[in-house]
Length: 220
Image (cartoon, rainbow, N blue to C red; front, side, top):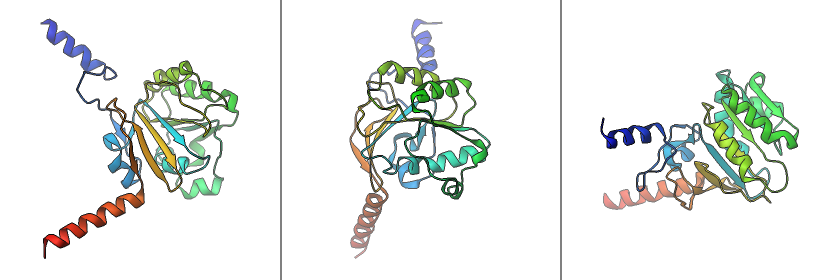
């Protein structure tokens, strides 16, 4: 076996290594929201990787973006863990969103959220884990530990920061800024590059309308 072939096999076994100009790709799960799937790199939430959410305000729609995925997981009897959530919808709202409460675990103690999320990820049994770090600075080491644990979990993993928190340097596959609307800004993508791009249901409607107008003019 040549040295080049051996190196290629090593790289194939390590999708977390970036090959210069090559675009990194990761398997993804549908968000359940068509406009978001069409806008996100990879067409959904990365599997076995961290996705970081940076809401501008608490409760500005971060959980609403995740509910379609979380509902699917619980309907398949895959446990979903919410660790240290700032806000949790009431049971009726969750049921209306399709969440099977028997498979939803809520860790309410914020001070234990990172530890609890890491243990759940290491189990490899969860459909998805969503963690809200406790108030105050978030350490780089804690986030890296979550990423390592996420690689052992089959589903998407999310870190939701508080509005006054700054994310540490991390190896997350996807980082999104969130504003009411909802409006989603892609701050980091699985390509490893920083790309600022905004997505929202309204913006997609505007784009579709403009395409229709161009098509109509071309037919005249």
